[in-house]
Length: 318
Image (cartoon, rainbow, N blue to C red; front, side, top):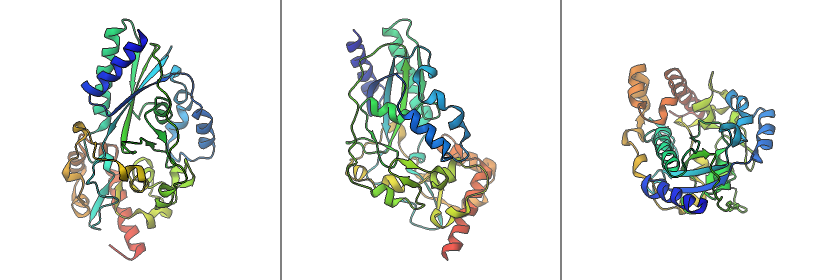
């Protein structure tokens, strides 16, 4: 019965809900909890205090949902063959990471996970379930690897052999026992292209990221003044950084697989720095509406634009 239910769940996730990948992991505590604790002790999380505050929950799905037995892991691809390899080439533009140039994936994935939970409950009456996207306190990449969706690459992104790493993850934690899928193994080999490509040298070693040196963290998550040490490597990045993913051979091999629900919004691929510098709070709210850019509040928008300009001055450019 549980095997049939697991197959039905994955089939519904893939063919009815439009997920690119689906797999099942057990809900026992995660080995990554020890690595997370060490990472936090080193201060590599920067100002993201919420990671420390929720560390105990992150490494144990049973704390996220009492009585958890299984985790249905899903992913949605946003990979486009025509996507530019790095920041917008024109210096007058403000570069936005590729995942953020489209509808807010949190809403897209969570809405579908709720439908998946209802599907599960209809077939297993009394089942408890709880959806999660990346804002939830779970080690989602380790769960996804445990469910066979991919492996954690040297740049800490989940990599799938067919889709690459431009995928967004979600989970449905449940107290129903489902047969787990086979975990994926590491296929990075000796490649270190992602580590070398990082413009700010944020990787202390393979799979060891110091967020305090990461341009994605600095432009999106960091509160306070923009780190002066990162100005020379910022380029025209307004929100996020695609450098380590652009360098990954698995992404260069992947064919276009962006799901329709995450189709890009053209105006976000070529934002003008000058125009952004003239808009007010309401104007920025309009630009960011319904996209991941909503995470960047107006004061930090202004901060990032000023940082781009200052970085250009340090390099002797625009």
